[in-house]
Length: 295
Ligand code: ADP
Ligand code: MG
Image 1: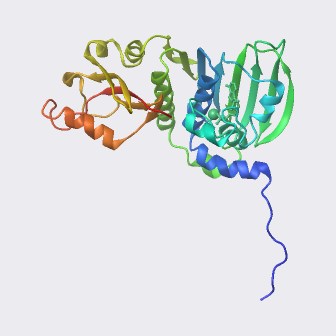
Image 2: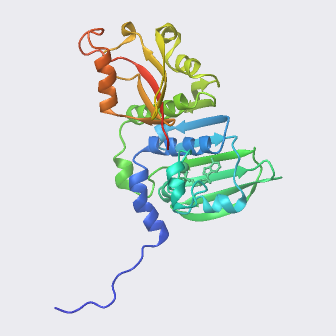
Image 3: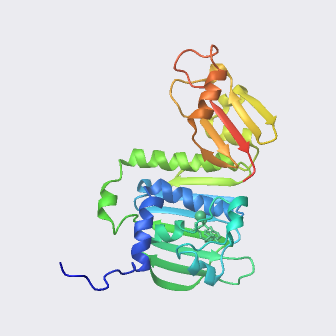
């Protein structure tokens, strides 16, 4: 056997980002989730989601949040670049959605991205154009205060992933699921969602009950029973549906922990058990429950 010389090399950044992207971005809905969460983290009160072709050609999120400086706009797309944590201890008091600083770098590695941002202290905004993780251009641009990120042709440089996308209906369904999870968790924010230029949702800021009714329709209004409970470790708030509102198929089951959507069979079972004998077999109770715990 011949001993090798030095053979180990570091990946170039854009290759590392493409690999990391496999974890962060499964489908267009993942992009929707990351971009909307960033808008929420940026203190936006208005967030618009614009999607074309179930996210294959475009996922755009426009917010009126605090925006980014010209340097931050560039840095935001570097891996492990975040404004949300500075030291290890910060990990134990996270109040933002993001903190890993990986989403934008990952998304930009596998799409063509235009990002425009302007702070309320800036006279003019800035635009950054990135393709496959490589910065093509950065230039001043007219802009509203806030940030607009357009993700075009997702997976254009990873054909295997692009071919793996499901039908438009399925991808759109995933996008809608992600959208609704964030909008239910943040009833105080105005949200809009357009698909192929048609309005899908226009949700006005309000309280949780109003948001639930906007999303699921007037009929649900009289079906919601408020829940409010506080123990030493957890605060629980929200609504459960009256037994007669239960449906056979799943769909209106929402747990949030510190305003993040979660799925949890143990908690689901606890609710299902509480409804035992109140519901015919195979009916699932609806619930919108917010758990608050120390981060
Ligand atoms: P994370 O959210 O985990 O910090 P991201 O890659 O999603 O990582 O974003 C990187 C950084 O870019 C954020 O920490 C934030 O400072 C900035 N950023 C991203 N999106 C926005 C936005 N819509 N408005 C203002 N700043 C943003
Ligand atoms: Mg983020």
